[in-house]
Amino acid sequence: MSGNVPSWSEKGLVSHLHAYYNSTMSESTAKTALLVIDVQESFRHRPYFDGAELPAYFEAQNGLIQGCVRAGVPVVRIFHVDDEGAFSLASGFVRPLDGLVEFAEATRVHKHRHSALAGTDLAAWLTQHGIGRVIVSGIRTEQCCETTTRAASDAGFAVDYVTDATLTFTMRHANGRTYSPAEIRERTELVLAERFATICSVGQAIGRAKTA
Image (cartoon, rainbow, N blue to C red; front, side, top):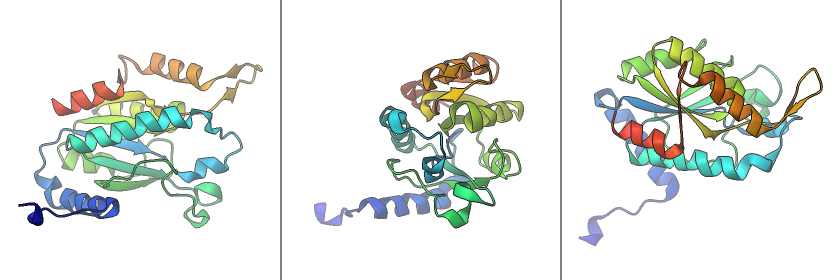
């Protein structure tokens, strides 16, 4: 019996799962998709980048990805692409941020605006595959993740916003006040909750996806 069980390398398993997604997605009954937004090396080359929050972020982000994969939830990778600089394809930095777990992409989206739905075919892809709810995660909490959440909600999708699986950096207001990542996360939850999204923990988001 054991001789008939294939032995997968990590990369081989990812490739196998990618092929599985491509062959079965059109018949999938999945109603939820996970969006992994802008988790790319480009950010290390921004002057505001600070790695202090990375360990906690990766624990949540990787746990969310792995939990969704186990639950059969399609995972969408989204990269932000500019014409120049660290976010350009020519820079070589538009690739997964070191520390992010590998996963089979159900599809990949290159966006050029803050919202992952603006100027892309993401909304059409979600609708085509019968997906009515998205789980939002990635970088940055108050920027592309929040903007995508608002846009998805306005487009008719239910949104689960997993704050712990988002990353941001210290910001300074024009009045001189400095806002920590924790304060920015709190503010983001305040403006999204009950209007644009359901604020979820990693476990809650995975549990809700399983029952969709």
